[in-house]
Image 1 (cartoon, helix red, strand yellow):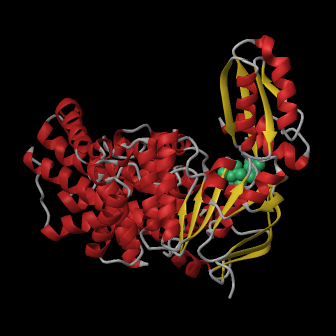
Image 2: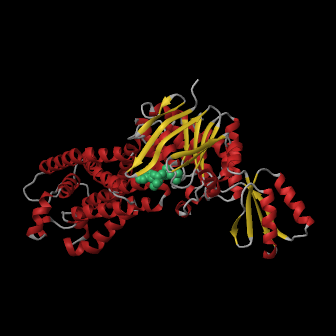
Image 3: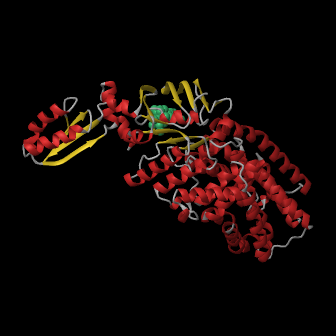
Length: 255
Length: 319
Ligand SMILES: Nc1ncnc2c1ncn2[C@@H]1O[C@H](COP(=O)(O)OP(=O)(O)O)[C@@H](O)[C@H]1O
Ligand SMILES: [Mg+2]
């Protein structure tokens, strides 16, 4: 089971290197986002690019991972349509091995995206003002969140008819979650009605945790880093507790 | 000693569609069973049940004595499946596809690579081994898919319409590969829409339609039942048609049919009818543009077996 999952995870990773679009998703895209936001909007939003990179980089990492973690549903749906799952199912491996393999493979993709963004950030002047192990913890936090969130995508991937529909539905969920948060601007600058949502949006707390861990600042007034981390842990537990069983149910029904 | 594949009373319904409505199949070890039927007959459903991909709603099936429902995992160790639509990963190379499956079958990476090279060689894919499968032609994909199903040296192999959509030369290649498998002692269940294919490869043929068996026989027996081969004549001038019709009535086993305005066809008992017709046509100096002997099409098989013309819906769906 574990060996099979790793073999299948390798498939995801190999495909990523072979498939330019998927590779761009986790390398060029976060770099481009950083360039656009830091150099084009940075001056206007934060007064200087140096200040803004400190603010925006954690958000860009979170956003990249959010979008990457939702491709799993599209990929699984495509695999089923194309009959690749029929091949897997005719082999003497655990039924869930292809699913866990895909999740494991995505962790590798996330790690690449995070590393690329952090290294690029450091090159253009991002300062890590915290102990090194805080950076490690930040990476753990964002990956844990991605792994909790990916079950939403798996569920959609199993229920939707076409991979196009999976993509559409996933975006519908990710877009408001990412943009109605403190990804690009401090929450305090948003309209009051939105602040309500932003303050309960788990993505905000993931971003604030990342900021706290990477730069030492947190944006939402009143909440300490520990408070933010507790929010994130609670969100992960809830997401996992609700969507993991649903996703597994839908997967087993289909596979 | 049980047969390699034994199915009794298999039933599978999809909503109102009775995909399988009580099917019995037996394939002795080392033999080839051809399952012949039009699109929608239930062939794929039967294969999927026997390959443990689908649970039957009724009936039982064993493969090498193992129950497909309760011993699914053990069944999967003994079977190889080549589905109707190639199930290779298009974003991996041919080599990567095979190595991955070898590893999933518990081979070490080194063993998997050796086995993959062996199969790529055998299926004439060595040159394409390092290319992404999405760049392969239809025939190459089929061959890769077939090799993928053989990695674990399965005792029982399912081939679901292995040549549908291939041109005649590619089809002959696939047939040769299947014959090699047969020589190695593999038990094969093959589905097809062509009597010619079942006749060329199978020891026995089961004809199914709408989830029911409508005939089971050896290829010889089935050809006898369905009027054997069909003799087709296209005279150079339509004026000769009446005379040719008379000759065909004499040599044929049934009233001739006229599939096209200038073409006459009749089922014949054996090849000698062709010789007789050639002699008669030559003696009467009738000029003929085309003269051929072929196996009946699936439509003609159904006509002979059931006395009913098949509605054209199934054929349209196949296109
Ligand atoms: N998953 C499914 N859901 C609903 N109907 C299905 C499904 N699979 C097959 N069928 C129906 O069952 C019948 C038999 O299908 P199939 O076994 O694929 O036939 P064949 O392989 O002989 O063309 C068809 O009418 C088909 O539409
Ligand atoms: Mg079919």
